Every structure is written in C-alpha cells, then in structure tokens.
Image (cartoon, rainbow, N blue to C red; front, side, top):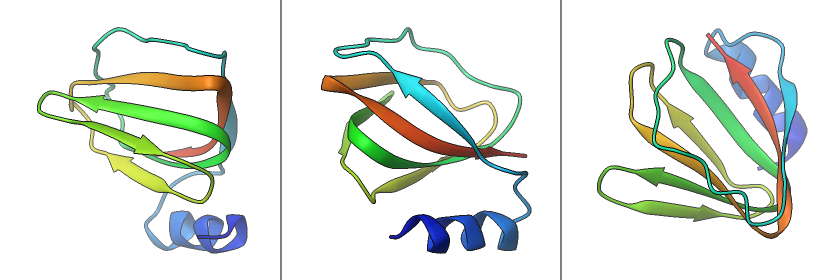
Length: 88
C-alpha cells in the first residue's frame, strides 16, 4: 500500500490525522494496550507487532489495525522502524 492510499483508508475509517512514530533499532516493547484503536503503516525499516498468540513481521508498505484494549507489544528490526499512525 502506498502512503497516499493509507491516508485515504485512515480518513475513510474515521481515524484522525496521522503522525510518525519512530522506533530505535532492536526496540523491544512491553506487552500493553491502549484506550484507542490505531492503524499503522510501516514507512521505513522492519516493525514487529507482538500479539498474545503471534508476532507479525511487517516491512515498508505493510499495515495493521489494533483495536482498543488489545494486548500487544511493539518491536523493531535491526535498522529500527518508522510508522505512520492514525488513532480513533
């Protein structure tokens, strides 16, 4: 998916204006949840979304949606990662 396509999808699904989220190389976040839903697309590097039963490895152009209250962890590959993130 392109960045323009992702921005259109965010708007269509009622997400707010996206922001960039930066992850350091080999970042390994704790399992947590948010009070909001988020859609994110990788724009640089490799991002790993850890869920209770799987870890999803994503590269540039890949995207995911995490519903409010979902337990997850946020990790990055060896060069770090940049994501474009919208929330609602």
